[in-house]
Length: 174
Image (cartoon, rainbow, N blue to C red):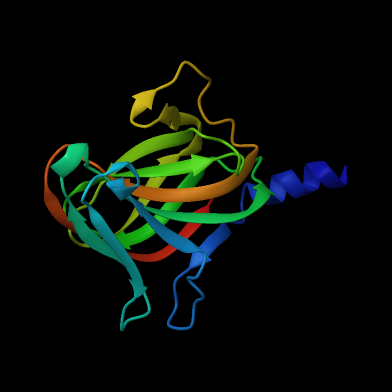
């Protein structure tokens, strides 16, 4: 009975995965760029003067590169009952990927896409629509089961050279 009540409450109470504030500890957020494969892209992450997470940089296609990612690995949590990820952010009009991993040991991620408007907005990504990928290739596996969550990430890789800038206010599950 208690488990059923807890699952029912989760449907109505969002879970904050990260709230960017001026005193937030962002030490568990890391950028991983195509330099791991010889590329030349460069992403940076910091708290800006307003206390928002600011992810910016340049994507380069040199040396078969073409992506930059920002990753937040956390202790694995249970996420049954949640149906969507919501992100309050301000982008630059570019297309990004929202990525999850069920387990820290997973090589593949579950991927969904969103395009920013250039204004502050709340982006919603349905968890059941996140598709498994590895190195940009879709895998013949089921979509994200939304049972456990060990990592969230944002990736830009639009097959073109471009500067990017994304401000993050918070990330929640609903």
